[in-house]
Image (cartoon, rainbow, N blue to C red; front, side, top):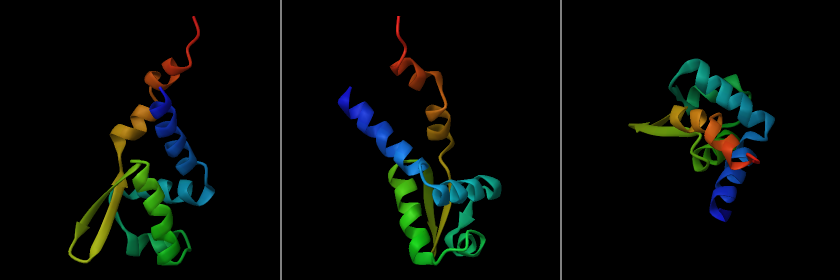
Length: 95
């Protein structure tokens, strides 16, 4: 059970940042987006953007695909649906 809690802690910490929520929102709106296009939209230097993307990636909230020299990111729909599912609610069900 401890591992499960640690896993959710990582995911919720990744979501507990306004900039990362903004980044996630842009990824959802655009489908698959290149890091080069995100930098201007979220008004953040690419190095700082990469830091936030790594946190989202480590929490399995996004998926990274590399095409040539560019990295493209998209929402990990399975994980997003899992976080919003009844399974998470059942962890804390009493009775």
